[in-house]
Image (cartoon, rainbow, N blue to C red; front, side):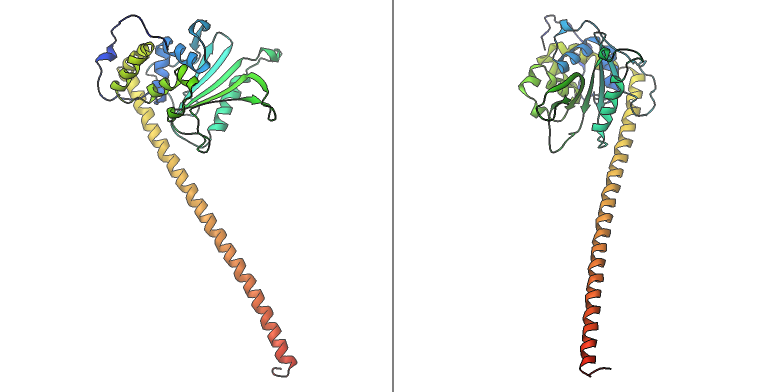
Length: 297
C-alpha cells in the first residue's frame, strides 16, 4: 500500500479507546465500503492483486440506505461489487461458523455466475469472485490465511476457467500470511477488520497511510446514530445466532452420544443374545448326554 504524501487531518485521529463496533459487524462492513469508494477500490486491488490504474470503475451494485433496517435473513448482507463493467465480486463478512460455508459460498458464487440472458453466447459470462472474510477457520485440518479455489483438472491441476473463483480470508490466521499476501496488504486488511481500539487503527494507518480514508469512514459511520442502531441489532442477532449454533452443536453432540450409547447397548444385546443361544445349545447337549446315559429321562 502506497503512502500518502499529504498531511491531511482526519477526525479519527482524535478518537481513543474501544471501537463501538468492529468491522466484523457485517452492517458496519457494508456501510464503510459504501461510504468510501477509495476503501472499496483498495480492498479489491489487494484481493485481486491489481494496481489502482487497472480499476476503471468499481461500485456496489446493491447499496443499502445508511441506517436502513435490514431483515435478519440469509444472503441479506452480501455486498455485490461490479468491477470494470464485466467482473462481479460478492463480498461477505461471516463471524459464525454454521459448518456449511463450502456449500453456502458455492451457492453465492453459482447465483452470480448463472446470469447469462437466454439466447446470449455463453462466452459472455462474467468473471465472478465469491470472497468470504471468516472469523473462524474453515478447515481445521487445513488452515490457511488467504485461500483461493478454482476449477482445475484433478490429475494435472490444469485450469478449467479463470472466470469462476472462490476466495476465503481467515481473519484469525494472519500468522500464516505468505510474503505475497503481505506484499498486497491482505494481512493488513485482516488486522484492520479485527481491530477493537482506535489505538490499533492508528497504528495500522501510521504504517499504511493509504488506509486513512478507511479509518475515517469507520469513524464517520460509527458516529451516525442510525447506523449504530443497525449495528447493535446485527450484534444482537449475531449473539442470538451464536447461541443457536452452540445449542445446535450441543444437541448434535448429545445425539451422537445417545447414538453411540444405543449402538453400545445394541452390541451388548447382540452379545447377550449370542451367549444365550450358546448356553441353550450347551444345555441341550448336556440334556442329551444325560438322557443317552440313562441318567435323565
